[in-house]
Length: 209
Image (tube, rainbow, N blue to C red):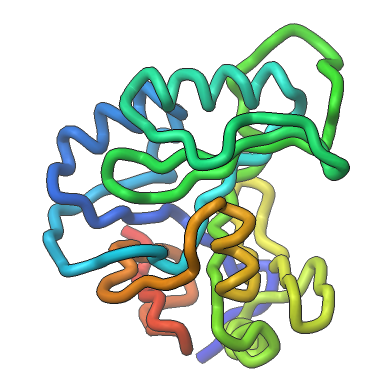
Protein backbone atom coordinates (compact mmCIF):
# COMPACT_ATOMS: atom_id res chain seq x y z
CA UNK A 1 0.00 0.00 0.00
CA UNK A 2 1.32 3.43 -0.90
CA UNK A 3 1.64 6.08 1.77
CA UNK A 4 0.18 9.53 1.66
CA UNK A 5 2.47 12.35 0.54
CA UNK A 6 3.01 13.84 3.99
CA UNK A 7 4.14 10.45 5.32
CA UNK A 8 6.80 9.72 2.71
CA UNK A 9 10.21 10.37 4.22
CA UNK A 10 13.82 9.16 4.10
CA UNK A 11 15.27 8.36 7.50
CA UNK A 12 18.87 7.67 6.55
CA UNK A 13 21.32 6.55 3.88
CA UNK A 14 23.32 3.34 4.34
CA UNK A 15 26.75 3.16 2.74
CA UNK A 16 28.15 -0.31 2.18
CA UNK A 17 31.88 -0.06 2.86
CA UNK A 18 34.84 -2.40 3.43
CA UNK A 19 35.52 -0.98 6.91
CA UNK A 20 32.50 0.54 8.72
CA UNK A 21 34.64 1.82 11.61
CA UNK A 22 36.98 3.71 9.30
CA UNK A 23 34.05 5.11 7.31
CA UNK A 24 32.29 6.29 10.46
CA UNK A 25 35.46 8.06 11.60
CA UNK A 26 35.95 9.70 8.21
CA UNK A 27 32.41 11.03 7.95
CA UNK A 28 32.34 12.26 11.54
CA UNK A 29 35.45 14.32 10.79
CA UNK A 30 34.39 15.38 7.30
CA UNK A 31 30.71 16.29 7.53
CA UNK A 32 29.20 15.36 10.90
CA UNK A 33 25.87 14.09 9.56
CA UNK A 34 25.06 11.92 12.58
CA UNK A 35 22.32 9.33 12.26
CA UNK A 36 21.35 10.34 8.71
CA UNK A 37 24.35 8.37 7.50
CA UNK A 38 24.88 4.72 8.46
CA UNK A 39 27.36 2.03 7.48
CA UNK A 40 27.61 -1.71 7.03
CA UNK A 41 30.36 -4.00 5.82
CA UNK A 42 30.41 -5.05 2.17
CA UNK A 43 32.96 -6.10 -0.40
CA UNK A 44 30.40 -6.39 -3.20
CA UNK A 45 32.11 -5.89 -6.57
CA UNK A 46 31.79 -2.33 -7.87
CA UNK A 47 33.75 -0.24 -10.34
CA UNK A 48 33.50 3.21 -11.88
CA UNK A 49 30.47 5.45 -11.33
CA UNK A 50 28.04 3.88 -8.87
CA UNK A 51 25.09 5.84 -10.22
CA UNK A 52 24.56 8.34 -7.42
CA UNK A 53 25.93 11.53 -5.87
CA UNK A 54 25.33 12.59 -2.26
CA UNK A 55 24.83 16.33 -2.07
CA UNK A 56 25.10 18.73 0.86
CA UNK A 57 23.33 22.04 0.27
CA UNK A 58 24.54 24.86 2.51
CA UNK A 59 23.86 28.57 2.94
CA UNK A 60 27.14 30.23 2.00
CA UNK A 61 30.60 29.75 0.44
CA UNK A 62 32.49 29.65 3.75
CA UNK A 63 30.47 26.59 4.77
CA UNK A 64 31.35 24.89 1.47
CA UNK A 65 35.02 25.64 2.09
CA UNK A 66 34.86 24.30 5.65
CA UNK A 67 33.13 21.01 4.77
CA UNK A 68 35.22 20.30 1.69
CA UNK A 69 38.36 21.22 3.60
CA UNK A 70 37.69 18.82 6.46
CA UNK A 71 36.72 16.07 4.01
CA UNK A 72 40.02 16.42 2.12
CA UNK A 73 41.96 16.62 5.38
CA UNK A 74 40.28 13.38 6.49
CA UNK A 75 41.27 11.56 3.30
CA UNK A 76 38.83 12.51 0.52
CA UNK A 77 40.02 13.04 -3.06
CA UNK A 78 39.07 16.21 -4.94
CA UNK A 79 37.17 15.54 -8.18
CA UNK A 80 36.02 19.10 -8.83
CA UNK A 81 37.85 21.84 -6.94
CA UNK A 82 35.63 24.34 -5.13
CA UNK A 83 34.89 27.32 -7.35
CA UNK A 84 32.28 29.90 -8.24
CA UNK A 85 30.01 29.29 -11.22
CA UNK A 86 26.90 30.81 -12.75
CA UNK A 87 24.68 28.76 -10.37
CA UNK A 88 26.60 29.40 -7.15
CA UNK A 89 29.65 27.97 -5.43
CA UNK A 90 30.70 24.39 -4.78
CA UNK A 91 32.90 21.38 -5.39
CA UNK A 92 32.92 17.58 -5.49
CA UNK A 93 35.03 15.09 -3.53
CA UNK A 94 35.26 11.30 -3.42
CA UNK A 95 35.32 9.68 0.01
CA UNK A 96 37.81 6.89 0.78
CA UNK A 97 34.96 4.37 0.45
CA UNK A 98 34.27 5.58 -3.10
CA UNK A 99 31.08 7.59 -2.51
CA UNK A 100 30.83 10.91 -4.37
CA UNK A 101 29.92 14.05 -2.41
CA UNK A 102 28.96 17.44 -3.81
CA UNK A 103 28.96 20.40 -1.41
CA UNK A 104 27.35 23.53 -2.80
CA UNK A 105 25.47 26.76 -2.18
CA UNK A 106 23.43 28.97 -4.49
CA UNK A 107 24.96 32.01 -2.77
CA UNK A 108 28.16 33.56 -4.09
CA UNK A 109 28.84 35.66 -1.00
CA UNK A 110 28.91 34.95 2.73
CA UNK A 111 25.93 36.43 4.55
CA UNK A 112 27.04 35.77 8.12
CA UNK A 113 29.63 34.08 10.32
CA UNK A 114 31.13 30.85 9.04
CA UNK A 115 29.26 27.72 10.14
CA UNK A 116 29.22 24.00 9.31
CA UNK A 117 25.45 23.76 9.16
CA UNK A 118 23.98 21.62 6.37
CA UNK A 119 20.61 22.86 5.11
CA UNK A 120 19.76 19.84 2.97
CA UNK A 121 21.22 16.35 2.54
CA UNK A 122 20.19 15.13 -0.91
CA UNK A 123 20.52 11.69 -2.52
CA UNK A 124 20.84 12.33 -6.25
CA UNK A 125 20.22 9.18 -8.27
CA UNK A 126 21.60 9.04 -11.79
CA UNK A 127 18.96 7.06 -13.67
CA UNK A 128 18.47 5.68 -17.17
CA UNK A 129 14.96 7.09 -17.69
CA UNK A 130 14.08 10.07 -15.50
CA UNK A 131 10.39 10.12 -16.47
CA UNK A 132 9.87 6.40 -15.80
CA UNK A 133 11.69 6.48 -12.46
CA UNK A 134 9.80 9.64 -11.50
CA UNK A 135 6.50 7.82 -12.05
CA UNK A 136 7.77 4.82 -10.07
CA UNK A 137 8.40 7.02 -7.03
CA UNK A 138 5.09 8.84 -7.42
CA UNK A 139 3.40 5.43 -7.37
CA UNK A 140 5.27 4.69 -4.11
CA UNK A 141 3.95 7.75 -2.32
CA UNK A 142 6.40 10.56 -3.08
CA UNK A 143 5.18 13.90 -4.41
CA UNK A 144 7.14 15.98 -6.91
CA UNK A 145 8.49 19.30 -5.64
CA UNK A 146 10.37 20.33 -8.79
CA UNK A 147 10.51 18.82 -12.25
CA UNK A 148 12.33 19.80 -15.42
CA UNK A 149 10.93 17.39 -17.96
CA UNK A 150 13.15 14.38 -18.56
CA UNK A 151 16.24 16.07 -17.07
CA UNK A 152 15.76 16.54 -13.33
CA UNK A 153 13.21 15.76 -10.61
CA UNK A 154 13.19 16.68 -6.94
CA UNK A 155 10.70 15.11 -4.54
CA UNK A 156 8.92 16.71 -1.59
CA UNK A 157 9.92 15.32 1.81
CA UNK A 158 9.58 16.65 5.37
CA UNK A 159 12.08 19.31 6.47
CA UNK A 160 14.11 16.94 8.66
CA UNK A 161 14.17 14.18 6.06
CA UNK A 162 16.95 13.34 3.63
CA UNK A 163 15.93 14.64 0.20
CA UNK A 164 15.65 12.64 -3.03
CA UNK A 165 16.34 13.85 -6.57
CA UNK A 166 16.70 12.21 -9.99
CA UNK A 167 19.07 13.15 -12.80
CA UNK A 168 20.06 11.39 -15.99
CA UNK A 169 22.99 9.07 -15.33
CA UNK A 170 25.38 10.76 -17.76
CA UNK A 171 24.41 14.23 -16.56
CA UNK A 172 24.93 13.20 -12.92
CA UNK A 173 28.36 11.77 -13.69
CA UNK A 174 29.38 14.86 -15.66
CA UNK A 175 28.25 17.13 -12.83
CA UNK A 176 30.39 15.10 -10.42
CA UNK A 177 33.44 15.15 -12.67
CA UNK A 178 33.60 11.40 -13.30
CA UNK A 179 33.09 9.11 -16.31
CA UNK A 180 29.54 7.68 -16.48
CA UNK A 181 30.62 4.07 -16.98
CA UNK A 182 30.32 1.76 -14.01
CA UNK A 183 29.39 -1.80 -13.10
CA UNK A 184 28.50 -3.87 -10.07
CA UNK A 185 26.87 -2.91 -6.80
CA UNK A 186 25.65 0.61 -6.04
CA UNK A 187 26.85 -0.04 -2.47
CA UNK A 188 24.11 2.15 -1.06
CA UNK A 189 20.66 1.65 0.45
CA UNK A 190 18.01 4.21 1.30
CA UNK A 191 16.00 3.79 4.50
CA UNK A 192 12.57 5.29 4.93
CA UNK A 193 8.93 4.57 5.54
CA UNK A 194 8.04 3.71 1.94
CA UNK A 195 10.23 0.60 1.52
CA UNK A 196 11.27 -2.10 1.15
CA UNK A 197 11.62 -2.29 -2.63
CA UNK A 198 14.14 -1.95 -5.45
CA UNK A 199 13.66 0.85 -7.98
CA UNK A 200 14.02 0.51 -11.78
CA UNK A 201 17.74 1.35 -11.61
CA UNK A 202 18.52 -1.18 -8.89
CA UNK A 203 18.63 1.19 -5.91
CA UNK A 204 17.43 -0.61 -2.79
CA UNK A 205 15.09 0.91 -0.22
CA UNK A 206 14.78 -0.57 3.24
CA UNK A 207 12.39 -0.01 6.13
CA UNK A 208 13.59 2.56 8.64
CA UNK A 209 15.00 1.03 11.83
